[in-house]
Image (cartoon, rainbow, N blue to C red):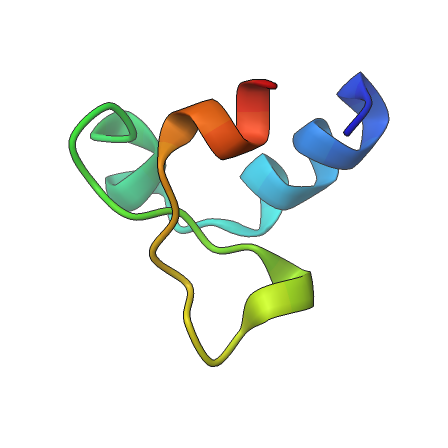
Length: 44
């Protein structure tokens, strides 16, 4: 995943989630039915 994709995903996550991203599930548009993914999946 490249930086542009990551930036777009982060932009779509509510502020409250983004602020707690280290301990909170993030939204991954390609996997809306299972939005909880480890940070490592987003950062490579």
